Amino acid sequence: MCGIVGYLGNRDAFPILIKGLKRLEYRGYDSAGIGLIAPSGSLNIYKKTGKVNQLEAYVANQNTAAHIGIGHSRWATHGIPSDSNAHPHTSESGRLAMVHNGIIENYAALKSELLARGHHFASETDSEVLIHLIEEIQQNEGCSLAEAVRLSLSQIIGAYAIVLINKANPTEMVAARKGSPLVIGVGENEFFIGSDASPLIEYTKNVIYLNDLEVAHITQGQLNIKSIDNNVRTPKIQELELKLEAIEKGGYDYFMSKEIHEQPRSIKDCMRGRIYPEQGLVTLGGLKEYSEKLKQAERLVFVACGTSWHAALVGEYLIEDFARTSVEVEYASEFRYRNPIIGEKDIVIAISQSGETADTLAAMTLAKERGATVLGICNVVGSSIPRLSDAGIYTHAGPEIGVASTKAFTAQVTVLTLFALYLSQLKGTLKQGKLIELLTELDHIPELVERCLQLDAGTRFIAEEIKNSRNCIFLGRGTGFPIALEGALKLKEISYIHAEGYPAAEMKHGPIALIDEDMPVVVIATKNSSYDKVISNIQEVKARKGKVIAIVTEGDEEVRKLADFVLEIPNADDTFLPLLASIPLQLLSYHTALLRGCNVDQPRNLAKSVTVE
Ligand code: F6R
Image 1: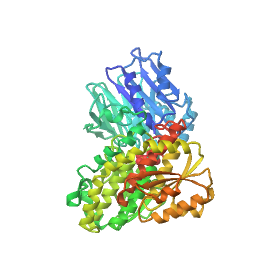
Image 2: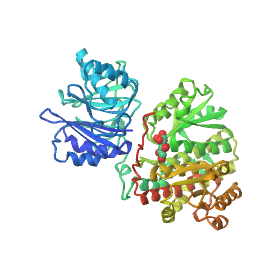
Image 3: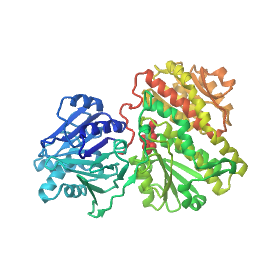
Image 4: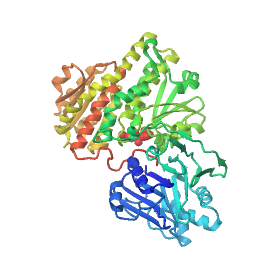
């Protein structure tokens, strides 16, 4: 939530910052701003409500000459999206400017103290309070800016990634983080800053991931890092593996479309080097050290949010079925405040695309404090969740930029399928023949996903039929249930049609009251053990004139006779239903949203990386 960028060096800072903000816009897009120190010494700040290109248009004829600057793309928490609430914010004297991602929880108390001491505020934000505090501490202590930042942060409760510039010293920049991500790109006598590595990728491959509670003092050609408790840290430079093509649209109109169509490749990447079908073997190198503990574990607890929580539910079905280990799936936000029963014997597994979700991180921290082993399933390499995990598995889906999760979800489901089979292998709960059979089929899933993508035209046709609906119900049984939840989430978040997912059999316990001729009901009705039961549920919907859109197995005749529309997916073992059935649901949401004129990549009120609770 919120994207921040910074540059200090010999190049023209403005184009680097604007391009960087465009890359980070998925993190927040209600307003944007930029702060530059001109060679003349003036601090020029430009801020605008709306997207980064609105800021760019606004700045077009202004003075943007600078070799140092900071930028911000906002997702509002404190104060409405407005020019004045946009970042950067400045200190009382106007000498310092700062961008911030996170939440200062004790800002109200700090603000009233600062007001009492004569400070004036130009915004309703929590962030502005921090920059005023920093300047005051610097003036009172007579210390360096980096030192003032360090001292101020010890008074802050909350989360932050901040970058500051100082009009009085146009060759210094200070950055710090706690709970919100920050990457520093190291070039030749120049430094780049980003909330992730995408703004720096074309300038340098050498990056430093700042750790929580660290302050970086950057001057031309020099970088020093200290912890908040005043210990000098040695910066660890890592080589970036990210490629530029991975963060560009590559000929697609939208990132979401690109990411949906990338799934055969992303699922393959996720399995690469991890399955050996002929031997019936799964290897998950990252978990090797914990294999005995996993084998002995009586239960596993998943913590996640949103789409990642749906993936965890799929994992629950597969793990309990194959490995016979009990699984609990928890919303991270509830788990962290519920005083859960967790101890040393437990294994808590966090699932996250971004690796930065505040609630998931807090749930992991709580589990660690109670002595549990904490594993992570994550997409973004080097992000906070893998760093907090004792061990884990990367999903290798590549950067996901569309706000609605698509390829990251199927990669999570692939990892969880591998994990369920790995655990069954450790525990000996599946016969070798069965493992060989399942892994052989899994190896071919990318080809079947490719065939599901051919449903593009079919889903567009159905989207025309449902685009004016106000509500929509999604039904499924077994692993079809989490897929129904995910289908409903996808539709509501990008098309703004109210949608709910239910276990098909639950319909008659309430939601059936909603069904009439205006209610589209999407049913996952593939040929599996619950097929006959789902057919009965479809009959119940039809008896009340609901409009049925059924996801069926290729060649199905029975559901075709009942449903208004069918979308056929290839026949496969039940285990792989989630990977295949998700595809037409993603396409259906995508086309419905486009037909309703919605921005599928940046749906309203959302942000890709939820770094606030
Ligand atoms: C929906 C979506 C969100 C995320 C949720 C958790 O399409 O993307 O529901 O799944 O915000 O995010 P991560 O997985 O980054 O922890």
